[in-house]
Length: 323
Ligand code: ACO
Figure 1: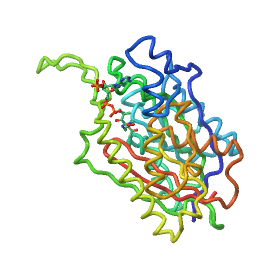
Figure 2 (figure 1 turned 180 degrees about the vertical axis):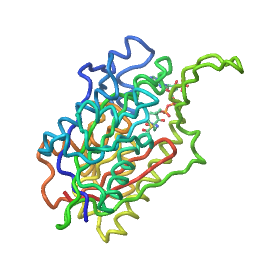
Figure 3 (figure 1 turned 120 degrees about the vertical axis):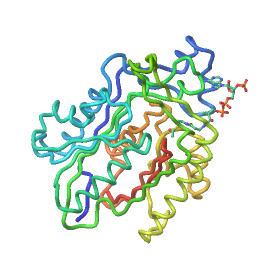
């Protein structure tokens, strides 16, 4: 039994905010942001958030797959910015789609979320319990960045990506293997504290929680952990990097991707990028990029691709997929 991706979709809010737009409202510049990160613009939601983006991406993925909402057995949404504490983003999307035969829930692994969700889906599919699934990576980080902290707010954007998967009995294609990991000892490197609502007994006042990051620590972690994870994944699948068409990496920072390419001794031609247009959309970067490649006709039957992510937790993971 293999889990095969049969359709993809992605969506970002229409409003685009360029680096120059940001430079008008804070002390930054296009030159600073572009040279350090590769970001030129990002999409920012000016109202509706996570559920809206996730549902739009999901509709496109279902259309691409030729699957009706009532045929979905399970929805897993990877997000750390669900619109509500509950219900989950997955349940909300289920409601919008009218996917009455599905079960839905969220997983939380920040920027590694889509990898964790797809890996989890694969495990469930292999049990034979489900036949058709929807995996979503979505984040609305613009609502949890501190817009007065120029060192973090310029990095992020909003968006969603989705993949429809199906359990297939025969054939070579599908998810071949996966690796996920976490190290909670390094949790403080990248955080977004829960928003406190105030407490009657202690007199605690309501306080917003924002993203806080030790940027250079994240950089060091990513450029060490991701190549290790990818190498171990490929070794277990007896696959050489030369057989991999694309390494579809979490879009956090162009320089991180360049360093990973260098460590894996591969050219940047193998690492598709779209951070220039979206910024870092956290759990959405990998499925948005996957959808772009799919729609551009760059993925052909038999192509092997590796999806790899890293993020808060700290978490990381990689999946080997035969298209
Ligand atoms: N515009 C202009 N100047 C800025 C900005 C900005 N937006 N942000 C910070 N600066 C200034 C700082 O104030 C500082 O000035 P000073 O030297 O006068 O004090 C100077 O630039 C350097 O600041 P640092 O924070 O040390 O910047 P650094 O060189 O580390 O670059 C960056 C920051 C790009 C985030 C870098 O640490 C990095 O690439 N980190 C990788 C992590 C990452 O990209 N995370 C993304 C999200 S996490 C994830 O997805 C898993």
